[in-house]
Image (cartoon, rainbow, N blue to C red; front, side, top):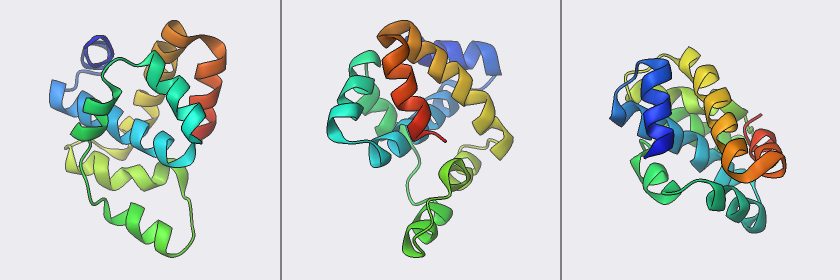
Length: 119
């Protein structure tokens, strides 16, 4: 998978970490975007469903954030990244690579849709 290869090469993470980290970000985008907007992102990312499937589940922060009505954005992903053995600072390193990849496949419109969902 091209995106996973990019992440492993550029960030020095394992394939499982790359899949899980990308999956967490796409899962967040799926939760925040309308079905139509997410379909545009999904169209630019081959295998997006398997990436989302590779994301660790049950991030404590994510559930609590929703319970208390807070959408803490990327902060909600810290629990999932730690389950992958990645520091939360890695979230900020995954995002630009994923955005660049999505832009190369789907253009500026799709990149901007995803970027809004990942703020």
